[in-house]
Length: 288
Image (cartoon, rainbow, N blue to C red; front, side, top):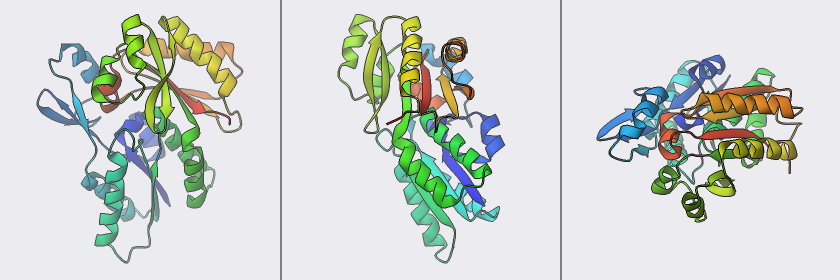
């Protein structure tokens, strides 16, 4: 039996997590002196309602190794013999390192255990790792072996295309989650930057003036880049404005030949802390 687990930045909904029996180690978010566990002690809707009123910039922390160890122990107790953990990029969080420590701690406590554990540094953010999780769950349902799941994730993790646009760059700049200095140009020219992942970190790849042009950019690039053999579903993400996400979904359906499922999912508190209100994203696998 193969168990799937991740950290909370995968940003999958409770419905998806329950459907595929995916367990999460929550990141922590410090909000004006109070510490909350992402998606456990604070919900995205609550956080986005208060975001504009905060006097201090929230900060996030990686899950502790203990959070991961508890999931590993529960999985083994349930009869799982193989465990695949997919973490957000090590370039943006210590979540992956924490999971690796948890794996070491588990085997120190259980030296005779025959369970197999693989930790994936997804090189992704938000629904990028979420895409890998859903794909892994679907492959598991179709009878894929543990080795096949590991190979798929390690092969395709850097091919998951991220598109992310934000209304306010301050959050990404302050948190150090964006590496491209040209982001400051967009800030002063009132352009909306479009970012992707490069070498495990966020990087600006384009700038558009206005939300309509951002969505047009997404759709045009999607048509050019999509790997149709691998991308049987896509994920559209949002923080505070679901209407824009639904508009993007409708544009993809109307202007492309893509016939797969389109998940519209809200970003969690940990990710939202860094991207802010009004963020809109899109994830699929691109051809090489």
